[in-house]
Image (cartoon, rainbow over all chains, first blue to last red):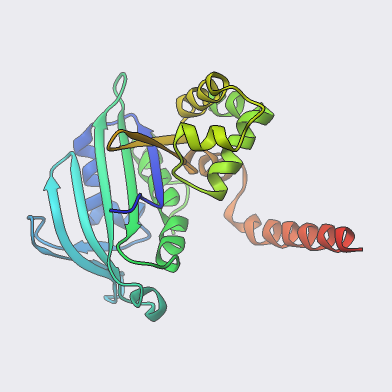
Length: 147
Length: 107
């Protein structure tokens, strides 16, 4: 497999369960992930969709690996922008590991299976914001940027 | 955040970040090839300081350790002092600066 295009890391003073929940539960993704919610039953092989508040599907795919609250691997394709959808499947890996003290290390990598750079460019603008939101929501109780 | 500013307060380390920005996911060997004036030990030491500040993230692929520019701490600095309402004006200003400086170079 090709090397990941991007690796994003943040350290968060919270438990792995709380970080997992901040990225997956609808109450939390409303604040951390630009208002979207996941539509999946969170089992290996299950279909997965990211849904905008107005019901449109942002992205779709499948749960390739799930080991709550440590590791989530998603097969991921954009659904709402034709030029991004045309690039086909990508793979997003979210890992939560113990770090020093009472913190955990949250790592997100995202890579396209085939050729192209539009999808990775699009998500690379989003991931640092989502990671910052998760960190500030869990550490201070509020997100810096809500949208 | 102190660690981030200390790490950024060194031209060689900013140069390493520029190299990763241009070509993300390099090994120590690849980074050293582009920096003939620096010893491997020096590059390795600078990378350790950048990794400590979380400005560089590493992943293992087989026997290789790949280094990535991690923009999350820099994003947090931006969030802290640059309100989102100012962002479009700042972008316009930096585009203007880039365009004018390019014009000057082309003269």
